[in-house]
Amino acid sequence: MAKHHIETTVNGDEVEFLCETEETLLDVLRDTLHLTGSKEGCASGDCGACSVMLDGRLVCSCLVLGCEVGGRRIETIEGMATGEKLHPLQQRFLEHAALQCGICTPGFLVASKALLERTPDPTEHEIRYWLAGNLCRCTGYDKIVSAVMDAAATLRRG
Image (cartoon, rainbow, N blue to C red; front, side):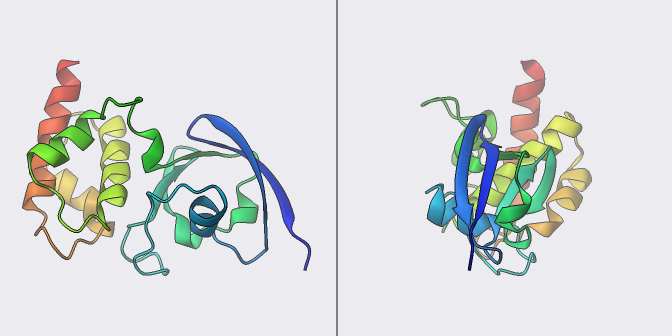
């Protein structure tokens, strides 16, 4: 079977790779590009652990084919920090103990960042609604919501 040659942008860097028709974007990110932050939780788009931004839109990378991303812009959890400096969301997740096993954390962070870019001052209800596609089996969500609210306040202060 012939592989597809794909050129795209991941976290601001131009990359190219070969992938088979059935490989998902998650497969490509983890196995080909060695960006292992995005996790496979369900492989059916139900848990949000593999959430990434694709051309500014939040998507489950397990539902996107790798051969569909040519010429597009992908942002993953690996692009969130600036060097060693954590993004305020990452810092607040640590401070609020909003993570435990860590499988869901990258997806929650990417989704939360997408929310705050669109809604800088979200209510608790808006946060819970926006993050409804991300499942966590460990934290009970309250610490995640508190971390997002705290990060939103930090980002608004500038």
